[in-house]
Image 1: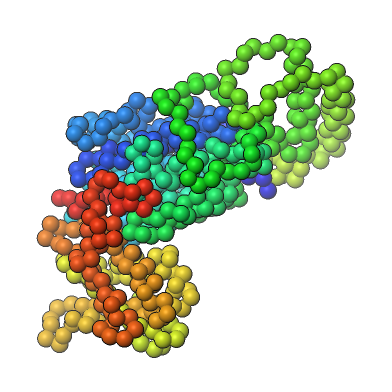
Image 2: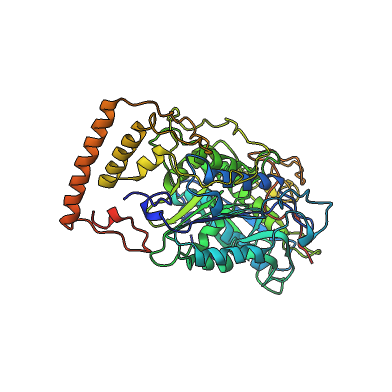
Length: 393
Length: 174
């Protein structure tokens, strides 16, 4: 069964969203996490990267928003007035809106501090003004409980797929409260195993986990390597294997999945076909705000080709061949889009190739009409996660 | 080995020669709850789970060695680990890593009067001698500590395994 793709037929016309939360400044005695500011950019970039991204910049909800994350942390005003401060109510409202509004792919990412009760239960996500008090029953103030706040919201989401990614201490303890609704497609990726704390990352680059996640999502060189959730888990475990978490714990990202599989990056065009080696530094674009392109991008040609199976895909391929053969004749306006990394520019085609393509197109259209007339293909039901070809085509 | 059961010596479910070590919690107002919490924490530690499944480790609780007949009040318990001799040091290292993390997290909930402390006592002689640990003595579990006996602090951690954490690096707040 093909993985769900927001860029594919099943995601077309649907509302997709990524709620990306990064808490860098903290009040009280808690450490600021400057690396998290980079995480916001890295995740946004990975999900919308030209050629490989599964979302458009307009699909992103960044918390804090652009321009709010540049605070210096300690030494500035405390609490809500702190630049880049994140309030749990703000996050909860964003989750609630996403729960109700998104009917395609919903991605929720959190980076910041995390804490659990002494028995390891009840992971709490900490925000700028969060506190831990002496109240033994209710010690957490201004936090969000994964078990009681976040998971219940997400389990009611209307989205075809929900993907949650946690990059915080004790992220793996969220696995204890992984309770999707019956039949819900839900995947959870945690930066580490239960009971493990992780270091705060490189203040100039991002956290270890998210830097590698970004690398794996954006460098999908070669057409044969779509970043499905399951493949990503394997790859990020390999990428993290050389590292040790705090206290010398092994560092193994964990996952839970309910449903088949979901695509988090489409394969980019060209390249060597190999993923970047461990230790290879991620080139960071500087000074470019997230989503600055301001244009709605289309997935790369290679990616779209991979997403179209069967007859429909063949029709599109033939159409593309035909249309590309017209390029030397039909002047196109200069594109605002950057070319996909490693993509091969289209060159002139011969008249013979054009005629061959048109001939093929005619044959395939005729075959398609015959199939449709025979009633052999059912369209997918609106609102279902299953693409049409899974419904018996 | 289930919660509260005896794990001492033979018949513990651990194959071959074994060594038993005791883990005690002190310095808190809720010693019993804390011991139970640490027991749960160790039971659910993924790397220890693998050792348990290989029958190289059993985790249980027993009356504390510190408990005497003259003591009144609630029963004091210890966590008792029974480990195969061949893998004892390796397994105890894994256990202690989890203990360090637990103590640091517990200190975030501590009253100002509380100083959570965990000790691990092995046999004085024979196999397993020298396995003893103490979070106070060994520097583990201190806020920002890195488990290597080095002071942690809030800055300067090493990427990919440094001493800083992303839990909550302060003792309990009021």
